[in-house]
Image (cartoon, rainbow, N blue to C red):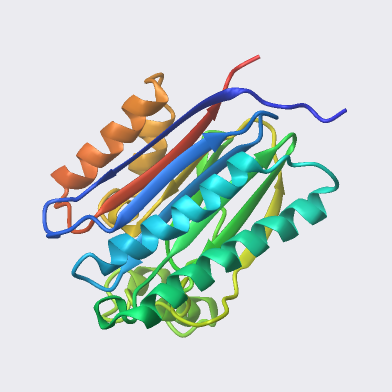
Length: 250
């Protein structure tokens, strides 16, 4: 019988120090079976359109998760999540067609589903999933950006990705087209601490600093607030969204 982990969740967004609106959404939920869902969305479109897109995505997925009894093989549960994410894509796209005000709105999405000793990451765009494994922060998702593509194909170095003029150009987003594609990765899970975040965090706080905060004995909600404070102290150049899970020690 696979071990089922218990723990605490925390989530928070912040406008940052530069943006006029907050278009990030972050949520976390635990269902009646003890399964965990974390989700972060970073909306795009401006003039509150990004906020609407990210909120619509998060609410669609979280509500479906809370109302779904998650049974059967993991393969079918992963297909169910993919279907719900595609439903959110359709909802955003359809709303965008109804009004010029919401035309071209969209959002990134990174979601993490933890059930027993399995962790599944669903990713669209450049929000990120990490976990703390052996006291080291490891990224579980790949940025779907033009610059990350250049790096993975060996055309630029990792250092060059930090200052490249096209580093914010996405190659994938939720709600932009009638259908969507996503990366889905499955990992063996053994109680690691998990953090999802938008680029407003990782562009202002280094992975080393994130690791240091996540490693402390602060409560999960305190860690999330500490990371947001650090991002703002370092310039707060974008909205910040974080969802966090920490399993109890046995």
